[in-house]
Image (tube, rainbow over the protein chains, first blue to last red):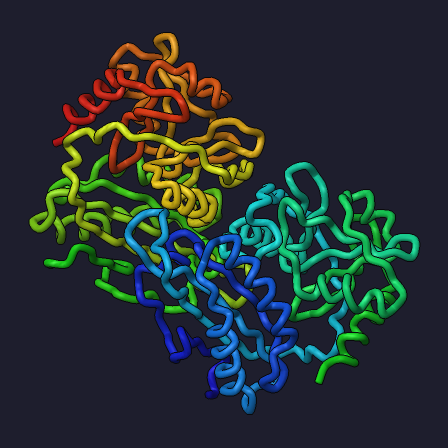
Length: 278
Length: 278
């Protein structure tokens, strides 16, 4: 396997998706992005746990056993080839008759694409500047926190980021509260406490967000509090970083007129991740 | 072509979609559902006009000429086979590098699926009962009115409809105002005027909704007013119907405790559609 990327559908190598497909027609499905180091996927259980939340929310058949089996297979195939890889795992509700109503009781399709990563994910990323996205995320409690395939808001924000040559964008909800960045969860250090946006109405509950809240920050003696936060809270933050599955945590150097040079909490959290990595 | 359904990608018959695809990964694209009678698609210009609104909103390359050409081709191929057909036209942003940011300047993919319809679309549908969807639509002005591929809210509502054996569902927004049904736009007759929900925050601006507002209702001497409407307005309506491209207009017989037996405005509008049909 010398390609930079390869795809499997239900365990078989594939280059095309048989049609029709409800993932394509309606975004009727879920996805996960996993970091893989020499064939070992990081924090599979947390990804599977979030996937399960999504399967329940969308009433898609439980396919966790098949997902685990196919992840093992794919990771085995790329283990000797690539040092670092990103896996995109998509679970697509199985095709049914024309129209929005799904067929019942069918196993979903499992699509996995592995892509070689150039970056050494054992090294923390250099600090990045954030811009503010014009589009504001819509409030949908029924789909908040899960990682579903309806991602046009993120695409619109990423298009703006590209035009402005911004590395990442802050996203607000319709009411003006902070939600996240385009591809990650936000953390603000303020008076010895980490603050992160509540995700009751929108946003994705990241696997690394969960690790920061439940494991990595407590190990450093830091409390994390989920709260309604505004741009003013960013301005008064002593340190800003975001988390996602490929960067783990990534320090923020600048937003608007504000600069941050101290990234010690972000670095300490990254070190926890490093210490745990096999 | 004896199959009940056939698909073309960029004008070539196809059974599978080459991967990766941004329509699949993020719902990054648009769609239209066209009614075709003996190879003649209905109201193509209105579909293309809405598609263009979507292309602009998502900054996808203008592909209207190719869409028209491929619609002509597909309609030609099914003309002699099927009396009535539904075309699902999807415009998918062309693949780019991994991640949310799109590649610039590439022509989108055009996917058309034609499906034979059993129903005689020259006959008005029998009146249907509505239920109320539990899920409420999220407010997203940047994506309102266009027919994009992020349709999980509709899928969730249709799953509920299926469980309750409901024909169609009323959808409210997060603030409790009426938006539409799952697959159509809503009209209420009240004191000699037609009322239809404002679509500034969510919902799809249907082609048949536009025809009712701009042509069919005025031809009957009826004014149509877009307004913020509630369930109380449904209750006090003298007649209720919804519009979509396959039913044109469909009378509503029941919602909650309320029944409607008079469908004369809906019938008169359907007759206008019949009179115009080639």
